[in-house]
Amino acid sequence: MSDDNRNYMNAIQAFLNANYKRNEITELARQLGCPKTSLFEWFEGRAPGFKNLIYIKKLAELHGLTLDELLFHNVKPKQSLVGNMIFFIGGKKYILEIKEG
Image (cartoon, rainbow, N blue to C red; front, side, top):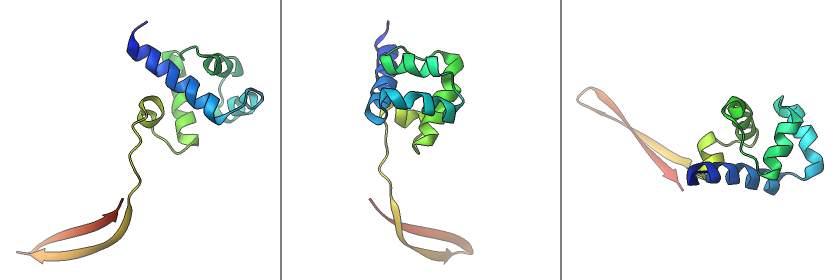
């Protein structure tokens, strides 16, 4: 098994174990429309197959994450808009946004 496959598998298992108890998997499967046997396998460390990617996407969305964030921990810090300024130069409109974060 390649390191990429192992990382992918470990990310899903770690996410499920961090956010769910074993007795909550059946309800999660219902919410995702996913076979509960698949979720129990992922919970135990088996990597989801390509055909199950839609359920991984739904799991990410349920938690407000992208697939990239869920699988590869590429979580970008949230930025909040503090203010903006609009300039017109030479008939063109420019917007300067000021973000906190």
